[in-house]
Amino acid sequence: MTTPLEQFLTRAEALLARVEAVLPAAPREPDWRLAHAFRWRKRSGGGAGYLQAVSHLAPIALDDLQHIGPQKEQIEQNTRQFVQGKPANNVLLTGARGTGKSSLIKACLNQFGAQGLRLIEVDKADLADLPDIVDLVAGRPERFVIFCDDLSFEEGESGYKALKVALDGSIAAQSDNVLIYATSNRRHLMPERMSDNSSYRHDEDGDLHPGETVEEKISLSERFGLWLSFYPFKQDDYLAIVAHWLATLGCTPAQIEAARADALRWALQRGSRSGRVAWQFAKDYAGKHA
Image 1 (spheres, rainbow, N blue to C red):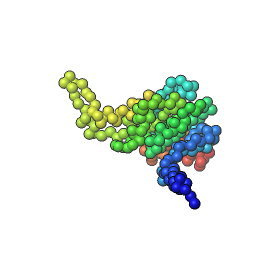
Image 2 (image 1 turned 90 degrees about the horizontal axis):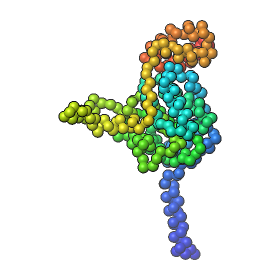
Image 3 (image 1 turned 135 degrees about the vertical axis):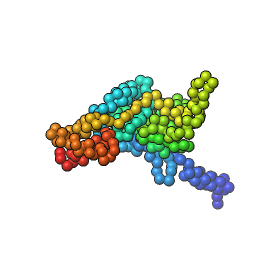
Image 4 (image 1 turned 120 degrees about the horizontal axis):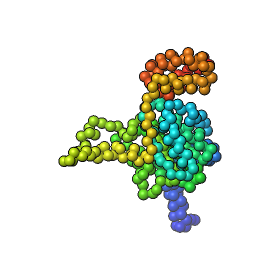
């Protein structure tokens, strides 16, 4: 016959088991030897996130990225400083679509991965987990870039506040082995409306002051120490990028010259002369002719 104490202990153990099933588990460390890049993942239905190793990296190199020389030089230098343990900035890459913003970050990983650089890709929906990710890698000897691709926010989204805090708003200092690199088509990461202008006010001496709405929208982008802007390519730049990729894919100089008119028609159909469009055309043309 069980005693009252034994009955109590049995019920307490059952209660603890039920509580443990509800509470989120602590993020588990991945095997850092498996890869240079990782994705932050959540299982369906919620629960704790985890880092998933990326086994096949895009083989893009810095030399493959054409006609963005100043941007390439700045982010390469910033990343080199970071890998060497020197002061470096969080980076915001903004501007025209398809001009190499995301590819530039991937190329930096390929350039500096052997020197200890690691990349963690985080979706916008998971930005609230940034403190958990930073805690997971704190104290590691590697240098981690948290990569947020195609970032933009609408009014009231929770990830906006989480990213602000992670960049420069927490009582805790940002870990010295973590930087945030983000790409966006929006300079201030949030939609800008005509109604924002009504919040500006004038002093009697003519000084112009932005209202709270405008201040809120620019406060996030200001927390990135380095801004890199990307612009649409001119026609000659676009054709040069096409030629580079065609040569990489095995086309002869004669084939590259013959492809110019087709490359321009391809861009006209898509309404864009971007590096992405050039790469897509090169794959199509090389697949047929190379």
